[in-house]
Length: 562
Image 1 (tube, rainbow, N blue to C red):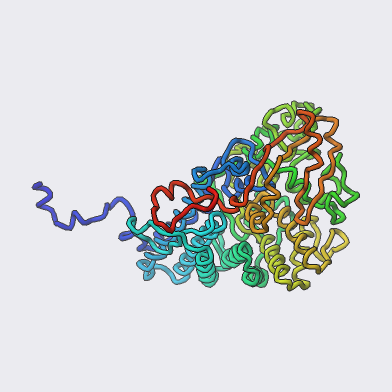
Image 2 (tube, rainbow, N blue to C red; image 1 turned 90 degrees about the vertical axis):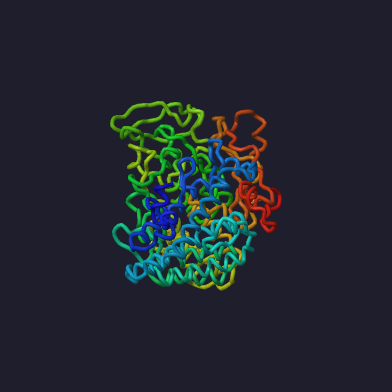
């Protein structure tokens, strides 16, 4: 008591001097930089070793997650308001929003000691990130509380804001960000949000909400700036050699001393000491066109005995499967094969030999007979659980397809629409879009036909990148593509090379009804999910139960069906 009374009374009102807080922080340029860096941290949180966007693809028709994780639970339609992934994406998004709000409210304190360019840039980054997090929230949960300033705990019990109002706030933030952000960066700033990040994300979120005119204008603005271009090699785009190319508009850069990911270990083949965790489905493999531009149910070039033959080159560049030479631990190369008779496979280097083929003998090898090649680089073989390979969150090919789809839905079809689609298609073949005899160029101007084409292009071009789950919902095809048996690879050698061809609909969604008769023989297939279930209420995820437990605002209610 003597010590307390002898001290200045202000002592009791001081903030802890060892910890930053809103009253003492945000007062220097360095502190603003640290604050905005923290706001980026939630862009790509990891679950089960994956960037969450990659794992999110496992809740779509294109990818299946083998381990009994949340992605598999959601794919089965068994998720609830307590499912961890559903709760974590909500929480991570709002943590990111809170960091942006605190920075935007308090950064004025450092304005006099920060250069005008840096101050404007950081403000733009914060507004972009806030818009990105809100875009994720409304796309998964629908109406969500809109919070654009820091609020005390006693005022944090908020109603859900109509999605349309949140979307308007997103557009406002993105417009402001686009005006403040630079076109590019150098050095250690590479990876930060840019002017084109804001415009490209605006085109995406507008497309998701059928704001065709907004999506068309925003994507055209990116195209007209002329800064971005498609990387010439589709396969290399997702390897270290293609990292931070002009195609990348926003990427999460991993660094060994800060954060790495274990995607290579989790996705790799068993003969590569991997876990075959996120598995491309047969529905993805069967969606690639043949080189004549026709789907496999219509093309005479398709061979059930060699499904990679005469196919869009992006199939082999995206999927690892029969006939590939691949990399294993210790620097070996070997032949990939999934045929049930192939209990051994060929090792090519350092010396030729026959080695055990774990892709057949291991019970947890790829269930579909395919492995995702994207973001698998031999450079990560040495330490596959510490990959530094940047994960692209937005890239130029998506912007081109956003533009094409928006213009098609507006029925404003002109040469620019065909050019956008053909640029993407031609790059897959490794040729220029003008070399129309070297790839199946799109020439039709029919709106219905082009709608089907651009949907197929999004499906195969962007496979595995975390966007498919949003596409199947906004196109209202999720109930069709997510329901039923998820067939894996044939385990009966008599049918391995003679499976019936599925029929593909206008969205390039395969129908495997012809496989049902083969189920009469137990063991004919590896069955991945039996069945997957998707109901109309699953178009939105449930509000996390933990939020409902504490927020008793009468306007904060659960989504229907949960």
